[in-house]
Each structure stands twice: as C-alpha cells, then as structure tokens.
Amino acid sequence: MGLFEPAGQATLVGSLPHTDPEHAVSVVLDTMTDIPVWPQLTQYPAEQMMVQYLEGLPGVRREAGRIWVDTEDLEQDILDFYEDYLDVESSPSLLDQSRFAMGEEAGRTLRLFLDRLDTRPARWNAVKGQIVGPFTLLSGLTDQNRRALLFDERMRDVVVKHLAMKALWQVRRLARWGKPVILFLDEPALAGFGSSAFITVSADDIKALLTEVAEPLRRAGALVGVHVCANTDWGVIFQCPLDIINLDAYQFFDRFALYRQQCFEFLDRGGIVAWGMVPTAEEALIDTVTAKDLAERWIEQVKGFCGSEKSLDFVLQRSLFTPSCGCGTLSERHAEQVAALTRDLSKILRGL
Image (cartoon, rainbow, N blue to C red; front, side):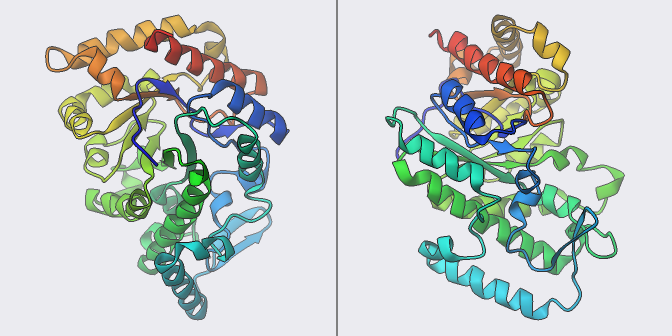
C-alpha cells in the first residue's frame, strides 16, 4: 500500500447524524479529500457503533429493544465460530462469504461509499474505516444475567477474534485502490478504565485485547489507531502495537501532556497522533470557534508540550487532525460545520 506521511492531514472519527446516505457520503468526499472515511449513520439502528458489528457473533439475542448474548447452550455455535475463524485466518479470501462480512443493512453506507469513491480519480492519500473497540464492546454487551461479556473468559476470546476478522474484512475492502488504509478502534469505554466498575481489569488485559485485534490488521498492511473521546490511562495505550492515537485534544490536551515522554518515544518510532481539535460536545461552541482560533490554540499547546526536546514541525509531520469525537449526536448542519472546520484547520497548519 505504500508509505503514509500524515503531515497534518485531516480525517473524521466516523459517525454522522444524516438520514440520507448519499448526502452523508457527499459531505465526506467533498471535505475529506486527503483521507476520506466511510460515515456511520447513527440514525439507522443497524449502523450504531456496537450493533453494526454483532452480525455473526454467537448467541446474540434481541427482544423489546434490548440486545444481549445468551451464553447458555452455546457449545456447538462456538465450535462453528472457531471453525469459521480458522478458515478465514488461513485464507482471508474467504472473508467475503463468511460470517465476518458486513451484511446488506449494516454495510449499506460503507458499500455506497466504496462505490462513490470508485467513480473519482484516486487523488486521496489514504482511506479510513472504523470499528467498535474490543473493550467497549465487551464492557457494553451483556449476557442473559446482565453481566458484561468482559468478565466471561470464553466469550471474551470469541468477541476479540470476531472483531479482528470483521475489521480485516473491512481493511481488505478499503485496500482496493492500493492506498494506505487507516482503521480506528473506537474505544469510548476506555475512559472508564481504572474506575470501580472495572477494578479487576488490569493494564495487561487492555493491552491483550487491543493487541489481538490490531496485529492481524497491521500484518495486512493497515495503520491501526485507537480513538478515545475522553481521558484515559494513555501510558497503557502507548504500550500497545498501534500506529495512531486519537484523543479529544480540545478538552483533554493537559491530561495527555502528562505522558509527553511516552508520546515522544511513540512519535520517534513512527507513531502518529491524531489531535481531536474541533469540539463536538456542544453545538453552541461549534458556532463560535473558527479554524484560525483552533490552529492558534494547537500551536500554543504543542509548543509548551515540546519544550526544547522536539520542534513544532516535527510534531506536525507526525500529526493528523480530527474532530474531538464522532458527530452522530449533532444536527446535520453542525456535523457539516465540524467537517469543514477540521478541513480548514488542517489547511491552515499545513500552510495551504
């Protein structure tokens, strides 16, 4: 797929609030010209962050608006799952006909995005996708007794392998143009790591979960990132085999800055930081910020962050710019405003 130099380019986290898939894809293609990303449309239940990746997972049940996994009498289903997993792991070409492919409903906007991108001259520099992260899915999905699957050793292994293959199917689809593929693991639940709810979850557990999903994707040539839309223990994240770390830099830059030495080591070995500099939490705030203000804010913060150890230009060359989080909860107007601000922020900092 070739080398990828981030150099301050822009992309999106993924979710949009639009109800018209054609319009949503147009918004992305018109604003994210360097790194287009397929939009998850949260207005459609099948495209919501966790639900979109449940197809093919053993034991999934839906009733009265609740989704859970029935872990009783699953022995044969799990045996079938592992047979399918081993088949596609040894022969990834089988993914399209497997349980790990996105179905018609869950993959509708992704397939539309691929078709639309096919009609354009391939002038972009990379293409991005996303999938729910293993910690977020395991902590949010429960069994019949409302116990998180994170605490079920058997299902934890199944879910992680399931997500790895779901993501690999996506990477293979996005690689069709021979451009670098970026795949984000969306991990909002990592903001809760270390809290009383996850007191028995260790740093090694987090590293193992992220590693098992990331490594097959990296072997396939993808650049793998983790997106956390609040604060977390970044020291643990820096120890994982990742290419990109995406944070809400608008609200949590000072917390992230506590890990400056680990960040410098990450950048020195080729890592990329995707700075979520465009706020998405409040629509009123989106209406007041400008790309110029955000650029000045980032420069001031990063100069202090670098001190005398690194130059601003070095960090910029190893940076991407994104919104602070997905735009799925915003109005369509504000989501489009965020996309435009992200594009313009990138252009200002790159001197375009």
